[in-house]
Length: 377
Ligand SMILES: *Cc1c(COP(=O)(O)O)cnc(C)c1O
Image (cartoon, rainbow, N blue to C red; front, side):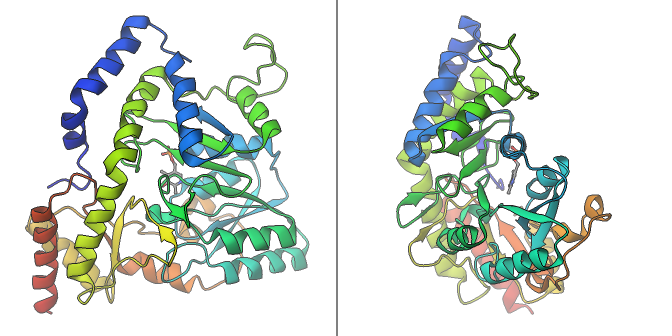
């Protein structure tokens, strides 16, 4: 059993993917071929925003937005404590200070009450200027954007939605990657919509921001890439990756999103009385980048993971370490909080095999192993 079976997906779409790749290789338009702009239009259309700007990966996507917004030393950017390193890295990379905020016990997403407390604390201390909130759609579930948007408006902050794991989710029909002032996603192979290497994209309704991002991703180009009007980077999505993504986006929309939600239902029906299963609030739809359960304590979690391994079932701990404890941030002023929820989650969460091609039998096998383990303790 695979944790995320990318081979099954390739086998199903082999003909279309092979011919899409072959077309790029034959045409030799390896950089900025027509597939890139076609994909950008399809992605913007699916998400429901005006602009999609593709780039090299999800981390660069966020960095480009930080550059466009001129986020720099002295600025405070609010980031959940329970996320992948990237979300805080892009803030420090631009010389600004990430302020880590504890997450909600039910959704695993940024705790909006604690977010407002953190903003007030930074304002009161007066050393840093609050500029941006980066909510993460963790494990595929959109963050609490209605409340985050209210807070951002109140304190005049920008919102960058980190939708690296959230692509395909929605809140009452409004799609992930359409929230805030800009949103980003990643096409890393294991994300909900992945390519065959690195890739990323930025989404926004802001015409001026889109214009700036298109310049920044190609060496700060003006009229063309040999007319350079600002300092930028080289961060493009390869034509081959765009061609692969065009095929995969169709599969994603046609059935994959529904299939992961079918797997979610199967898992949760069997496991809901045995362990803590994912909580999806009313009106929210997850793209299930991960299906993550919670055990009572670290011993139970580690014990279950070892037991699953013995049964040939892969599982992962996302995340072992809170952001505020990462060595790279050890010099940082860490806003005082006990990070109670994040610390607890790092000890008790376990992500199970999750992808659209998981069969009922495989789900049953995973669930039975968990039920047997829980009966034994
Ligand atoms: C994967 C991920 C990223 C970074 O994406 P890359 O394409 O790997 O650079 C950023 N944020 C979160 C929450 C992620 O899971």
